Amino acid sequence: MTRQFALPALLLATFTAGVAVGRRGTPSAATPGAATPTAVANRVFELRTYTSPPGKLPDLHTRFRDHTTKLFEKHGMTNIGYWTPRDSARASNTIVYLLAYPSLEARNASWRAFGSDPEWRRAAAASEANGKIVEKVESVFLDPTDFSPMK
Image (cartoon, rainbow, N blue to C red):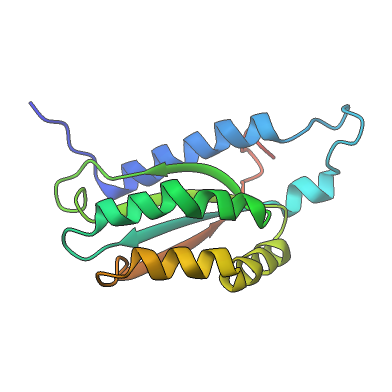
């Protein structure tokens, strides 16, 4: 029997994994040089979902694996995790990933720098030499709740 997960279950699993990783990456208040409560409170997570044209998901995975994740880090974005849905409707054309930033302002600055990076522009152009590999991008900003383990 094949188990299939609905998108809400995938999103919950994605966020839970991000919480676990985020907790390890967030210094405690007792740690010298630790992030202040304000810095932790300003931390923003972004859940992004990319839908690719038919047959282009492997090309999108290659671009993320070989270029994008490294460039995200270069520009101050924290890679939390990358997933493909298990449900048959989206398994062949969707990647879901979670990024973290110190603040919304930092997020915006990181994406501006990323978008103008010549290395990114070369990688994007090369990966799309045989056509577009992304049809749709969805973005959801997430803030930890007051009862979240990572507050």
